[in-house]
Amino acid sequence: MRVGSLFLGVFLLLSPGLWAENAVFKDVKGKVEYLDGTDWLPAKVGLSIPSGTTISTGFKSTAALEVMGSVLFVKPLTRMVLASLVRDAQGTKTDLTLLAGKVRAEVKPTSETAKTQFEVKGPEATASVRGTGFEFDGVNLLVNHGEVRFANRWNVSRSIQGGEFSSIGRGTSVTPPVAVKPAEKPLITAGGGAAEVDQMFAPGPETPTGPGGAVAAVTPTYDLSTVINTFGDELLLDKTIVSVTDQVNNTKNTVIANNTAPATVDTAITVK
Image (cartoon, rainbow, N blue to C red; front, side, top):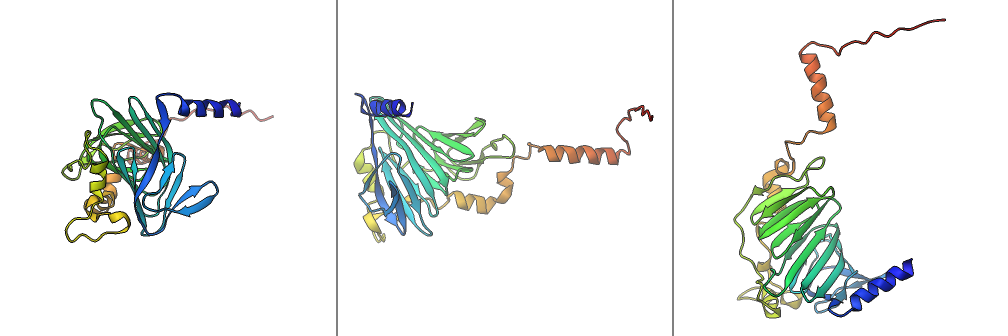
């Protein structure tokens, strides 16, 4: 069965009109590594890596990758997998698995001739988009522009628009979106090509550059961490959801307050 499944997967990837793509490191700062088989190797600007590759960033370390016309920014202390990078005649499909940490993405919008599907899956939630900019840590989502379908592992979902924040609530909830900032202007257009992505990493006047000439300006000043730190835990809890423990405590307190007791049931006990 395993051999048959493997053969089918290879056949699909090699069949006409469907092929796998690679991601390319556009910027590397600090300790950034990728898993090549059983070995962790240092990432370098310009390095091309295939789907299935695991990427890890260290303390105060970041990376940026071009993924089939979209750009993925990997934040410090993050580990993620490029689960699937596939292109066909209709467009591209990117599936990422976020194991820990945080990512930000600028996703190339769908055009009249090519559809873009981009999905980041974390342990608790999945962010699915077709051309937008967002930041996601597996639980909390901040949409910079566009629209994201934000779903938890029970497939409860909400549509989050540019400038809005949402998170996975208690129980099976996804918190209602909260407007926390103005929507930003997209950095990637549907008709733009490789030159548009390269421009994101081109140095501007008096802009310090790192490996690959990356520019700090591509990182929003009002990011996910800022939103959480500014608004606190009140944003992260859906107050309309009551846990089982809360229900039990509320019932108990009501009984005490009303000085009532549950109805008694007569029980006959026979002693022999």
